[in-house]
Image 1 (cartoon, rainbow, N blue to C red):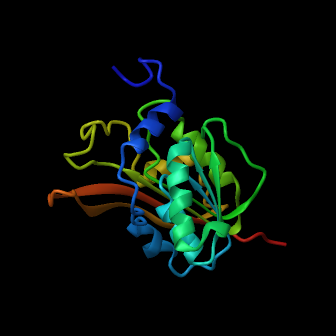
Image 2: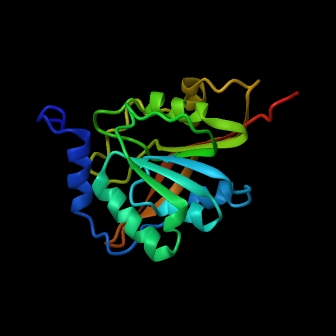
Image 3: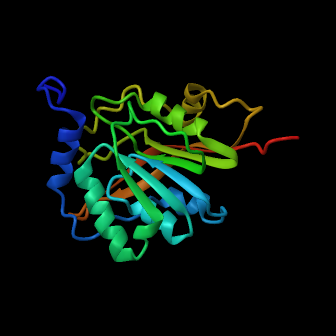
Length: 215
């Protein structure tokens, strides 16, 4: 039975998942963030599926003003507490919203998402395409997704249909006339479990920059 079969809403599902976590310490920002954006000039950033705020906090510490959106108010509360402890609470706006319904008229210098996957209730491609549409000329789009999962994941075999980086470019309709594709790679990454186990997984990494407007 899937969560949707039982009548669970996406918000309730993720609130329950995050409510079981040890949230005493903040998570670590994704390594692709510092690797690909460490030298980018800060501006306004949008993160979809912000989780416990590790990436939003990293961005805020590096001078970005961040809008962090997630379906779970529970995990956003965790993120807000960590941001306050990190001294960057004033640089992050937390928004609880279903990403299928969430819209904004704002534009951003960065739109990013890390492992925005859900077992039900999310059209990921459409959500990412809307985020890409809000990137300003000269701004960045960074999307990292799973291609494989470690054996201790809740659904390690459930990766059918997950797009490679090049497939994601096509799905999002990133036209070469409008976007410079900086990184389109399926990258290996070593992950660790708290019991000491390690595994190698594969991430689909897409980093693009919208061309500057021409006169």
